[in-house]
Length: 341
Image (cartoon, rainbow, N blue to C red):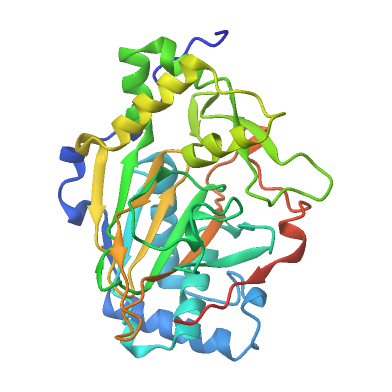
């Protein structure tokens, strides 16, 4: 292996004991902020029906904006995750909740397309797909299993809870910085293997006429910053393509070690998202997952989250393979997913 890994960004390392108090990562809206959000919502609604026409200027929240700016810096340069609490779900329709969420998101970053449909506001709910479907994405699958720790394809990922499941479905995060650094300290040869490009399955969402797999390292050092991209199921799925590179034996051992570390409670924080809660995560520093869950459609207890991918303004520089491409076949047709549960 050509890369000699080093410990990076120790200021962003944490263990579960460091963040055991939910008050450390929960930001609760004040009554004045909720009123400001409501006023911004009414203003944005008066501009028209297209949520995509709403940017920061069309969703004015001058009092809350400075708090959100601090949160944005904490996401990129600090703990890497936050829970925003207090939006009264019962007060608003689903469309209004989506607009509130979108408006808040625009103050944290610019929208980033999530799939070949160009969804910049997506749905995370059981969409009747099976994990054996080689074009299925994690946000479309039901909850009869623990979804593994992974990162998404943007600077930040946000999840708004519209509705909880009948049971289960806890959201959980793991500190990828601590996992990387501990791997460097304990098994540098395994860490080095994950600085090499790994094959990923495009899940059928590649551009027409292009190969159905791509390569990306799990770990990237860019200056003194660490960038992590890890989606183990997509790496394994790449092996269905005969022309895709085979997974190296040392890299396989390294990924098994990382998988075990993500499941170690020492690196984890668990949270039950209540309707109206919003979670934001730094995709480069924090992996996220969810526990198994069970819906009850007849009772209206269907787990339903709305997802944002965002390009933050705080992060001034990124490796080329982590940059948003506004001319990609995903981004050229921005749209909103409109599932109602």
